[in-house]
Length: 143
Image (cartoon, rainbow, N blue to C red; front, side, top):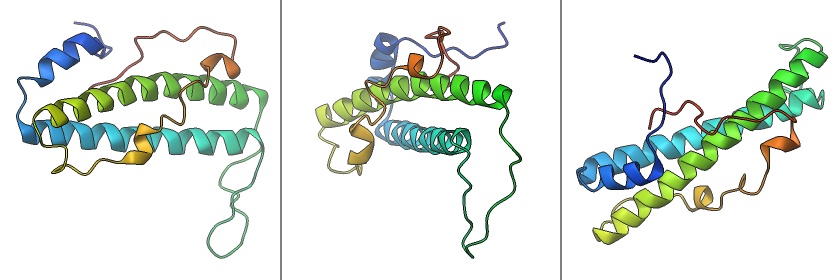
C-alpha cells in the first residue's frame, strides 16, 4: 500500500457522492470549505513572511516568533503555496460538485452555502508564479 493518500478522480467523486447520505454530503462540504479556508490562511501567512512583513499582535507589539527569512525559506514557501493552490482548486471543484448534488436533491436551501468559497479567489493563479518547478496534479488530498 502506498504511503501517500491520493484523491479520487473528480468523475469518481461525482459518482461516489450520489450514494452518500444527505448528512454525509453536508459533512464533506463543511470539511472541504474548512480546508480551503485553512490553506488560504496558510498561503497568506507565507506570502507575508516572504515579504518580510512583521505581523503585529493584538497589543501592537511586533511578533518576533519568526526569525529572518532565508532564501531556502522563500523556496519552501513558494513550493508550499503552489502545492496549496493545486489542492485548493481540486477541493473547490469538489465543493461545486457537492453543491450541485445538494441542489439536485433540493437540499441546497438547508445547507448554508459559503458564497465566498465559490468565488475561487485562487483560480487563474498559476503555481508557476511562485516557482518554475512542476507541481504534480496528484497532490495529497484525503477527500
